[in-house]
Image (cartoon, rainbow, N blue to C red; front, side, top):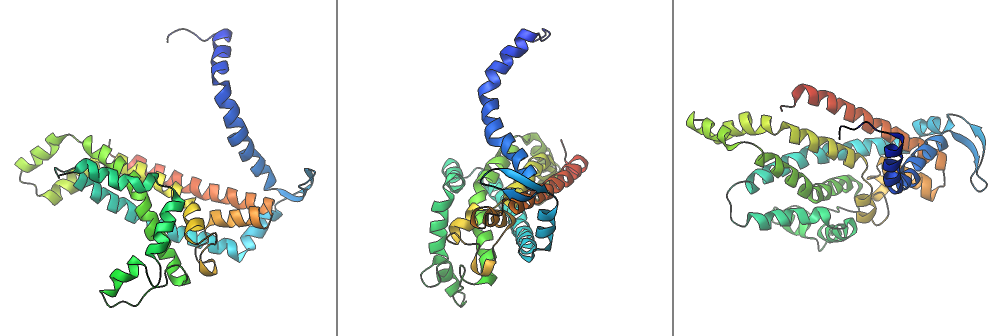
Length: 296
């Protein structure tokens, strides 16, 4: 480990890394660079790969497109609906699973299964749950004398339906991460607090929350990045459509439609990089807040 690198050792290391570097270069780095260049193609012959003109017309178009702003609005609504609730619910369940309850291992497996299950399979089940006439959701709501809700066909309810399903599907991952964080907290802190007469809520507020802040910080960053890129759930839940009357169209779905359905590759690339900038800004904000607030 203390030996200075030589030309031969560097070449040997690159030789070992070559297969992974080739795969990353072909399927990651090249598409990223190519899509960035394509966002500036204003006149392009896609069949012959000839660029006739560069410019900012694609960015001008998307910023003047009402569908683009609707997609951004829906994306922010989705993220604000999913991330806070997902973190709070998963933290509560993780605390319960971390206590001395029977069948803890079974419950942990049950909560994690939706996360590793195919999005298509999950969406098929939830489409049945949301069914207007025969769905379980409306069946339980009928006990409260609430009229059947058209979850998948009413633009007003499409986004809430998507948010509920996404929270349910993502709980398993957050619960596992929170469980790992809870088990790393030294029990002596809780014993000392009990001796001092601290109630359970006080112990949670002054011990669990501060010492779990690095885990919460990590979960929030991953959740925001993943939910800004939501697409599969929309496509599967609404049968290949962005909800009724485009009520669930997000930014990634907007990119998909421009690229695959309308063949507007330059516009799709420009929108993709706007999404990248949004996620990058939010990540920087979280990192800044994390450095000030996170307790290690």
